[in-house]
Image (cartoon, rainbow, N blue to C red; front, side, top):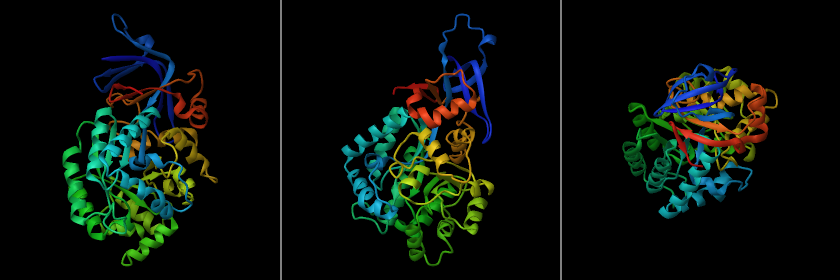
Length: 406
């Protein structure tokens, strides 16, 4: 048992956050067993971890990030496809070297923990070995993660391109080896339509749907990308329709970006309950466009936040909350909603809100201890965290009840 005396800042809904002052959290193994006022707690002969001068929040969640791009953060091009060909694909080829892949993975996960991210949905490369290494390193550090081998069987550099059947079969092998092992899940990862044949996408879609597995990919990020998809898949009614035809849409699918959709595409997303990872920093950095936040929430689509490193420049999800606010010129996303997006909202995107996302009895104890003055209002605390302190406020990280060294 662990007993932590603290103050809890906790997301409840998009519009509501609660602040529980001077309470004691009881953690039994990895589960939050109780939360009570310290005055009501019988502390006789019990060792209590005193964090009464700190604030505890749920662990932050990143719904879209590329481990393989960790070392090219900030390499600038003003167009997605140009950026991929100039920096991303050459860097991803380097991960074909197992020693390099391990070095990158170790550094990536260390930095992920340091900024307070306790759960992430992660792209690796088309290398089965590099993906296996990523799983091994995630397992060692005990982070909660969805990890996928990127699938690419067309329009891809020679060092990354795959045979269709081999790409699919290696993905299935990794899924069978790692899915639901400890805190890990496998996520099938066709990179995006331009580099995947219809055959490969359909194989992945059918298998994932039949076996209730996760899928992640990119959708409608950039105008040049959309034009290329239209050229490559003339039979499809839209970019989203390409994925619909391949059976890739569904409640356990996370689509990144989703900037330039028409109304029919929004209907496909809504009817399939497909989830969305909004990546504001990346959209701004690569000049991809402004995410239609208000339109999507008005259509009751489930969305959250992703860092999209290295299109995004930082793993810090507080920074991503800030960027989400900055990028909406005609709609103000209030601090409670920004906080919700990176916690409970993101847990819903990953279909994990039954076990993580906020601090509730019965959920797993993914917690951040923050070095911030607790004698503030909810709005003051969140404003300081999002717009000023960010990752610098993170002092301790707990994942599934265990303190993780940072």
